[in-house]
Amino acid sequence: MKKIIFAFTSVILLSLHLFANTKIVDAKEINQNCFRCHSMATLSYKDESTGIIKNLAVIPDEFYKSNHKNLSCIDCHSKDFQKFPHAANLKKENLYCLDCHKNEEKFKKFHFQTIEEEFKQSIHYKKMGDKFTCFDCHDPHSFKINARVNREIKETVLYDNQICLKCHDNTSTIKNLSGQLLPALNVSHSWLPHIDLHWKSVRCIDCHTSPNAPGVSHLILPKDQAVKNCVECHSKNSILLQSLYKFQTKQERDREGFINAVILNNSYVIGATRNYYLNLLSFIIFGIVLAALSIHGILRWKSHKGTLDGK
Amino acid sequence: MESNKEYFYPLWLRIWHWLNALLFLLLIFTGVNMQYANPKSPIIEFHTAVTLHNVSGITLTLNYLFFFILNFVSGNFKQYIPKFKNFISNLVLQAKYYLNGIFKNEDHPFETSKDQKFNPLQQFTYLQIMYAVLPIMVISGWALLFPEVLIKQIFGISGLTLTDIVHTIGAFFLSIFMIGHIYLATTGNTVLSNFKAMVTGWHLSHEEEAESQIFSTEEVSNEN
Image (tube, rainbow over all chains, first blue to last red; front, side, top):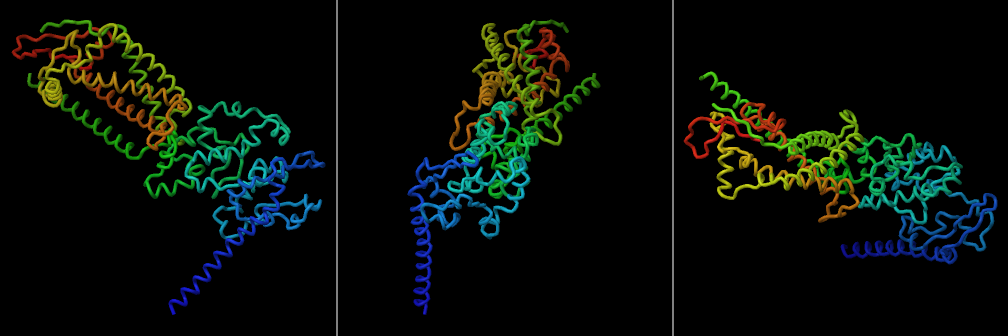
């Protein structure tokens, strides 16, 4: 009987495995047709109504490393794209991340619903409305989840900041988007000591979003509401623990037993980097020294007084 | 009892000493303010503390160089070199005095003079403070001022973190030293006499009558 169950289970597991693999293989095969053209780096067209050049290239290597690597192009795009030449009306295709990401149980922890609400309150949406979409920051063909999974904080910082810098470090792009000429980033941030070090160590969004989000905050604030008070990061209850270090803080706290370990191990933030044991030890030594000197002083005074009285 | 005055501390030394003392206080105050920065009760604003700390640190470096050069040129550095003979037993003798003799109004175990201003314990401590701890503080301080020059990783720990820990531990020892130094400065002839000597340069001592000890000395010794 056991043998039968074993054989039966094996067959089921094997077929599931094959089925799963087949799905990926299928996706790759379907994509292969698309990539015949779309892997060309220069594939693009000029939208005549807006004059904007639309990039249609997708780099297969990046796509297959991205979080969407198991999807086929037509899982998101219209199946009609399988016909070539593509029908003209397909240009109007309007994709939205939350069509997939909103209701599924496995996406619950990412709080997409909140992200959508935050995005609607963000300065990007307020200024640009529906012209600004998820895809302006997140390229679905190369998107990789970072902050939650990457233990190398500096890599997360680099990845996330590049998203902002794609537009914000480019004066002409910003001018096209906002209609105004903004000062260069190193000028607007000149108040920040060690600019380069800050930019390598923290993300733009750590200062420029509201830190109370359940996931990664998408509430990009107007510039006058950005964090400018050093102590908000440079203190024991650093806001970085709720933003950049959020996903590591809990694990590290459980392991190391003290909350600032995560910052201590990854970088150095004056005011926030405090070694618990050294801190405790210093207080103890300091206390002992003060007590010893006080006792010594009192004894000296008493013996001196005694001598005077004796005389 | 005959009082006599000896010119112990030349002007350059006094200027260095009091500027150093002022900078120590500023650096400790601003340093503690940064290390224990608290948004709810800022004694001094973080940004101000950083600027003040940097300016004081740079001034301290210049002051240290001033000390280092003049201490060498004037020959005063010899005061800092401990005598190898009976090194340990001399330290013990001085320590015993602080722990016991001082309460019995015993004399200081080592005579102080222009050529021998420090007792063995002072020599031992000052040598380390001036020629080890302070240089480490200056170097690590400058490294923190230019963090991009630091080695990124040392045995898997960030070079910046390590430099900071060295700087903080050094600062802690200097703070402890400063407290001990100020307290022991009160063990002179009178509570204030050593402080006065460091202001005027004139060390007041008074010789006692016949004394049988080899180390017959004054009740006074400049402790600090």
